[in-house]
Length: 466
Ligand SMILES: Cc1cc2nc3c(=O)[nH]c(=O)nc-3n(C[C@H](O)[C@H](O)[C@H](O)COP(=O)(O)OP(=O)(O)OC[C@H]3O[C@@H](n4cnc5c(N)ncnc54)[C@H](O)[C@@H]3O)c2cc1C
Image 1 (cartoon, rainbow, N blue to C red):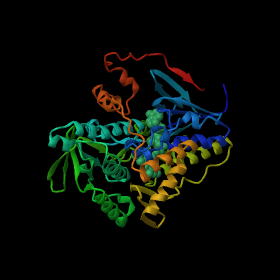
Image 2 (image 1 turned 30 degrees about the vertical axis):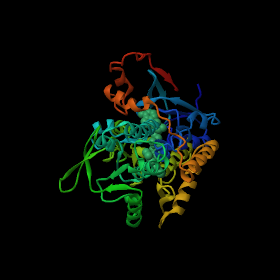
Image 3 (image 1 turned 180 degrees about the horizontal axis):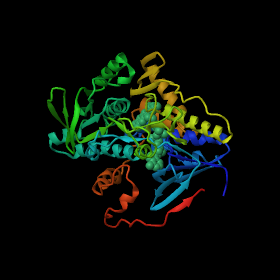
Image 4 (image 1 turned 135 degrees about the vertical axis):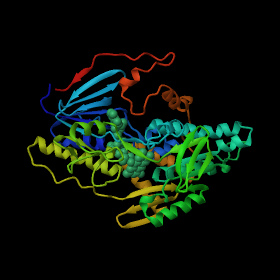
């Protein structure tokens, strides 16, 4: 077995992938373990959910991206434990347990949807964090129109044609804007009993602004644009109940309003991966309110210079949970390991270089905040298109994405309207089996399998590395 320094990278998102790639410069062996086989470009998930792009365009196989990185091995696995004293990572996939030893570990397991303690909302209001979520939402959104077409009762039809989006940050605004474009452009000629232009879209937030991080002027402009698109913006309204027929919101005075809606999208919050809790317990690191672990200025944990934690699951200097932070921290951690291996001293503490942020509202309309510049409209939208194409992985994906954008934004089409019944029922099935989102697969085994489902295998753990 190789005696080279062995780095385990957990996660194939922005942080993990950029760390693994950067380690090419170091004389180390790398094992990247992730619970998905792809690298997901989350900023374009809403376009998969609304039928503009296919999942392959925003989620290429990690193995393919790293095929020329001979020192990197990619392993599928849900990491269930990191033992910082034993220097091992335990992961499971398909009933196989793997234990991987490390000299250094980079943990980049990201975040999951947060329902602020009301996890039962998840069944009725999927979040938008994964390809599964996006395809399920696509199924829910497009099938709502199918059910509306079938529904003779005007009240029920109205419920099918009402979409509620919870959370007026970038994801919520993008979803609301794209559902509006579906209703008022893409689907207009496709139905005979319903008029899709009568779709009601309600964007709800407990705070008092839309796109709050972009400043007052752009926020107000975004809210006005949404209203022009026919989106009702309900601010200062906290969601207090959700079921299969709608949601209930409550304002500051305590007044409750029920919104009948058969399709609800949850874009309201995220929380750090549960791996953060276990790392905090083992190392004494603190956690913040968003379930993120507070890391040292060099992205390591107290007393463990070999354990790097980066990206959305971490809290450092109030840096935002955005792709650039994860990417820059990934590169920083890789450089730090290279220095350790070559006997060089540590780098300066990690410093985030803010390249700005952007959000689209609908076609031709976006907002951008770059340095002190704040601007919106067509120029911001063009910039948004360019930057997103630039960061998409793979030349072919860039070409097909641009073609699909032309179909949707210049024409009226949506190239990706296929949905399957499995996408629609999977969440309910998982809920019935009571499998939490970030379940330890060991727990899954204790659940009675559904009829016909193969029983889980229980092999002995496989030990890897030194
Ligand atoms: C809908 C949406 C839109 C966004 N838009 C923007 C945007 O426009 N601009 C921007 O800068 N940022 C945006 N973000 C945020 C950005 O995507 C995140 O900040 C970034 O992905 C964080 O990178 P990460 O590596 O920390 O986590 P992620 O990219 O989430 O990667 C986490 C990885 O860890 C894996 N993983 C998780 N748990 C385990 C486990 N237990 N075992 C093994 N593997 C595990 C996951 O499968 C995944 O591969 C958006 C996010 C979402 C959800």
